[in-house]
Image (cartoon, each protein chain N blue to C red):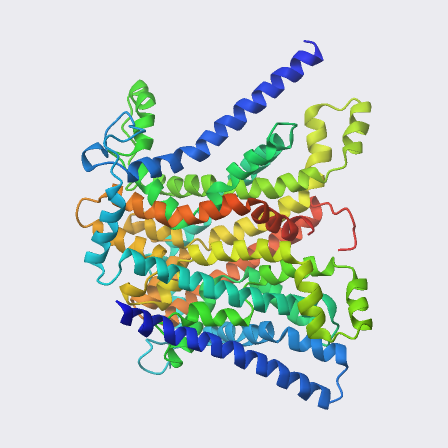
Length: 289
Length: 333
């Protein structure tokens, strides 16, 4: 077989596999979307009805009305603002704290720096569950169980070790001449930090912001442990609540898919707008070993 | 409805802003104190900038770490003081808990099946994405989508698809089943199959993220190596085994470690999928249940410590083995 024909066959196979895997990825997502728009009678119809007939957009509003009935006070507006509150406040706090801490590690030598840094890194291997019980007790002692504080206020203390690590790598790549020039011009550390460093790491901040937003939006374990009142639940918890109570009757999968889509869609949109930053953020941490 | 906003959001927002101010004040105060003690300017700044993380480590990592160790030797239900019981929790865990060993086995098997499979799949996909193809960015973006979606939403989706009688998976399998005269698999009640559900969903979810990391690793392999191998007449498999694999072994190592640690701690997924009771559940979930549903905080702490030690040992084993198969470009490790 001539090498050209072999090359052609390999290219063809490559594209076939690419498309096949792409379909495997897309298939469940499309199922989620179409199921969310189906009327009850069409739910279990086979072969799969890709375009529902009728297209029940009202499933979305009905699902949230039903949720409000089950969990009093948990309307669509409320659950969405809960989620945004927890996500945004936590993200802002974490970004600020992480930037400060990363700068400290990246540029300054001080006693104990190595110890603190490696202690921080080793927490990445700790199962979160082992810290949960005493942390819960701390918050209980402060009287802040069933509030948003454990989710939001604690973010001022620095957030995830991976975030600090990522930011530190970025900062270490900034040429020192920039800071030296600023110092010669008479800037103190805070000014250098604010006017020089931050603008230079904007891409990293964006990547990190996107990843942190996603992490907090999707976070299930922390709201599960710290929140008790249904009306305070973010969307992830609302889904769980919804699923539990609905499974006593015949599950209304179209409603559940509708709520799932509402949960997943913002992240998906965010991802497509900022996907470069998602992937960039992932790579800086990983490949540089 | 407005009261909801003020009673729930406002106090937290005020405390949130308050903590920020306190933090800044603390940092400034620490700085001046350090300077009073004649600490070098650079050192003082560095310490102060990293103060939030240091506090985090002390309050929310070190203290819980030690305290949970202490708790594991007590009986504690949050209403009375912890009562020292010595090794009782551990003994009960190993001998008297019907769900303990099944849960361990479930968690371990899940990690053992899902991690290697996911690595193999990710490597394959990364290799394909590495080929000269049009619009590689589009494919990369697409493949990463499952990793971005919330686990809750996707688990619910898969639960819908794996439903025994009405689910899509069985519907699609039905031609094959009829051909071989088999019954549709009972995904939720057959112990053998329940694990497969989790493995399959995790595969779908994670191989995209891993393949992006591995793709970056593949891009870093110098093409001269392949050209030299071609000159020596190396075949495709030889090139893969002796050039590609060693050169991406750091990325593989990272994927393996994070994969194992992540798989052993699986939590959210278990809440959205049905598991037959006799199989127990994943260890993280068991710990959660013992602590927050049954108020056996001491017992839960003991289980958590057992889990920690297992993860630690596994990680050490993988690290130790890494010197045999991981190749670093700059050997100063």
